[in-house]
Amino acid sequence: MSMETNDPDMPDAAVTHISQMLILAKSKHQEAITLLGIPDRNALPRLREVLRLLNEVELLADDAATYVEAGMIKAAIKDLHFQQAAVQAAIIRLENVKAQAPWKTPWPWITLFFLCMMIMQVWA
Image (cartoon, rainbow, N blue to C red; front, side):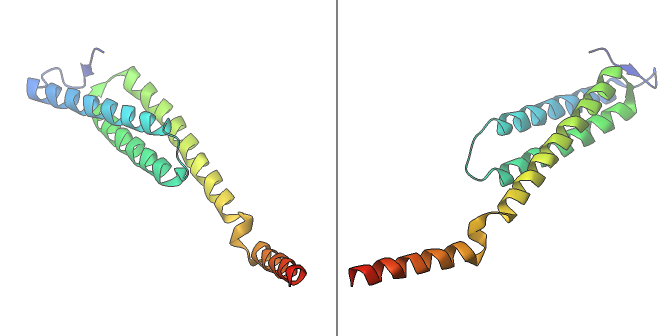
């Protein structure tokens, strides 16, 4: 990726710093995408970690974009916003499913208790 800086006299140290920010952003993004592919029983903590990493990527990319004019960075940030929205939607769906789990209410337990009582009376 070629970087066109806002300042043509930007020191090499600044260009190196920007490159390092973009490399770190890419690394964190790869880590987030890898976490998305790991199945587990409780996905909420993993999805929250993915969202945290994507937020860090956004900060790094936004910071780099203030120093250079690169359409690729702006397009990447736009794609990143879609990814963040998808992860946030998945978190909300999982939280709603957990809140609606039937075993969280007392009725299944009460029904199970009465069923056990009836079975015990049949054997007695």
